Image (cartoon, rainbow, N blue to C red):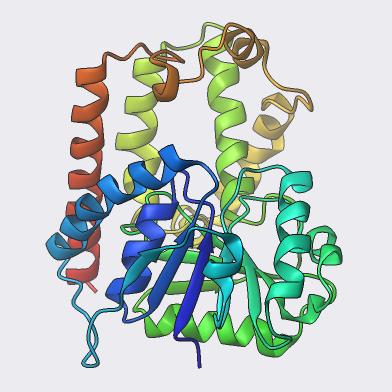
Length: 309
């Protein structure tokens, strides 16, 4: 039974993951080598807890779990049943963490990675019990989005996949178990296909960025929140899809590199909200307002979808 969880690496997702696990009755011990990340996480925990309150998510009968911050990696993983790695998306950095964790944990401890798409099969080669290694991909913001992808690598034991799937269900969340370990998994493969086409349309001058966002949010995004892509095919009709895709697929963006529009901004360190400018420009006041507005809308949509079942 999973009761104590070590969360290694806080970053953007860490506070939300910690808050959601604790609200589900688990004891969480978090560690990050950057003191600033720890302080930022501590400041974000009340915000995440408030969002969980607004969603009506209450602790189990046994009570809410605890969240503590460890001073070292060894302290964080001591006696844990599950380690969730949440360090930056760099296979080399992740490998270093796994090799450091390996002698500190028992052979029955499950190690899960929150990678957004690095294949599990390669990552699990850096740990002595790869059968206990699994992908557990949360979606941002993790305390609000209920879907979590579960991905086994070539050496992951079916029992490990089942244990993480069952843990997610016990928290009242929605596990999606992948049958194959593919780069990007499923959520990001679908998302990045959409983003590739969206960036291409703006870059080619077909549409302004603001209008594209309106088109997606109030068009396909509005529908897909209720009707998934496979169900949407049936609603529209496979005959219609076959007809349109027969000419449209050949005209869709299929570039294998990164768009110049993104590369130019990357070179200029215009990375988005984190730097104050990306596809749009942001003031500190606007950033703070956006965080609250978006969280509120996501909470409202989730409550409506759950109520309408």
